[in-house]
Image (cartoon, rainbow, N blue to C red; front, top):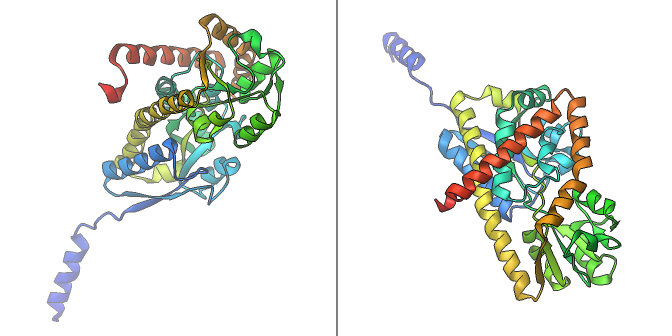
Length: 346
């Protein structure tokens, strides 16, 4: 090759556009690759990949990188680029997100996720609070509404709670204790044996989980509390990694994250409907708690809402303003559902 040709070739190489290399993000998930949440997480990864054109995901399932209790630090420190954070493990750091766990009148999975997602995505004080921890909010999940299954007992009113041996969930369990229940510390995975052996009279949980764990084999009644849900869990991302991405890739992640509420809402509502049918087929009595009794549960949970406001204020957030904004969002998306139906039915 002559000097002239070599120089010309080098010049062409210098000005030729370089193809953008694919970016693979490590996503940590403490749960297994099955069930509605896993399906929604896979949907998120596929959607973000499609929207960006150059993002790929290496999903580490089952706590392979770190367990749920270490997720916040693992993501903030860059052990994973992004991953699922369950706020109950981080009550101080994730106090803002914890608003979605409060025992409010918030029992619709889709409505709750949309309200939570909007608050976390648009509230500047929440965004700043997360940024201080080197985190960016991407999208939300929910476990759906908290209900309760019982063996040898039936909760038809708030008065029926007193004296029962109950496995409870967060502030929902605390409210049951205040109403006279004897709370038994037990994992949801051990509740089948607890109900079968008589260690428990009742176990709070979620419809799809009750059926998946085959608790319909050992309960006689299942009461729809129509009260609230545990919704403070979702995907957070390492801010340094997020900031290093192109604006197009950032928008792809945020758009796919926002869509998770619709996708998981579709999946989990269908799962819960199937679970109720499974219980009915097994002879379990399905009870709907009367509105007046639900109002008593909401009133009973008020001290835990007030305690959350104090915790939020303590970290520099305006707890009362955030709660008012969240309630307005719940009302907004409830009205949207009532007027237009769910997005997947329109």
